[in-house]
Figure 1 (cartoon, one colour):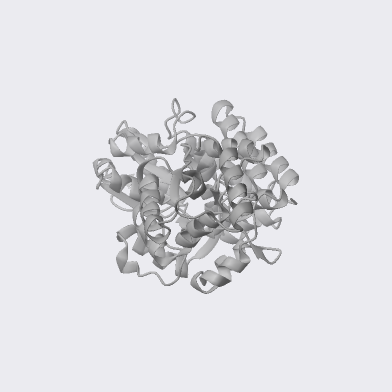
Figure 2 (tube, one colour; figure 1 turned 90 degrees about the horizontal axis):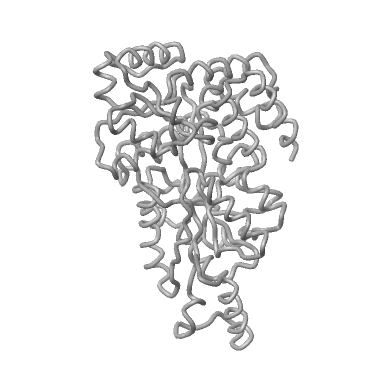
Length: 418
């Protein structure tokens, strides 16, 4: 983070008054800084950011990347810091946000700029699939540039641990999964590694997809499926049952990387996590992992996308636009996604450039039913996401199922219309 972003902004203003344009290469260093605010501070996420930064250094050599990363999976810590800075009129030059409904809060608050003209100028309206463009468009305007597409509903495993428990194939139903979890429990390992708040919401969403199917699951977020339905009740029952197979003593303090370490160390059999896990496991030199769609999800691809925006009153708008062009460009997306474990948002990417997992995900993205994720902002607003995260944490500690169901219904009633 910059020592003084307000001083940098003042310098930009002075340069604009004197020259009527951006300062030249010989001007003060702060006018060339582009502070990029993310939550990519570890593992495959950091490796992906490094790849993108390298491309930015080539494409935008006149600007200087400043890393504003705040650690914390899914941005739980970063979003708090960002909210404070935005409320104080001190935005970074650009910040990471999940594409989809999560952006509504920033749009309604007038905190980010319309990028529709840049989409046309940079050819992004043709490079990105129409369905994604439609999802990014709010009242005819586009406000972010996605760097990737991620899949949320992936079940990761330690192949050696599974083999020792006699598990030789991937379960395709929840009941089959419960049977496998019992085998792991009998071997004295944690059957299902789990982390805190948003990771618990991810697991509930996967169970909801299994019990409701993709159409009714999507209906939970657009008002077509009631949260007090019997199907949701069954999903809560199944989720409660799954928690009995998790690391109860540590799940409310573990981040996702802590849970994945249980997998790497052979202390757990499974972990439900987004496909950024592939790059993280690869970066940590762990090759003994397997992956499959969460049992019961069938041919459903639960998607999310990391994107970047142009904040209103950013100190270096032109530098930010150069960053955004790099983010959406073919070279930037390749440099980023091959390391992060995600797949490119662009349709002109060559799947042969990607490791095994990404090749499978690219094929699935084109053919499977796509549903959004509330845990990662594509399905719901930040307020709704926060309410559900709190409800999941409370349930993890007190096990009050009636209170959880009531909280799910109350959150939908409060936030679904916003």
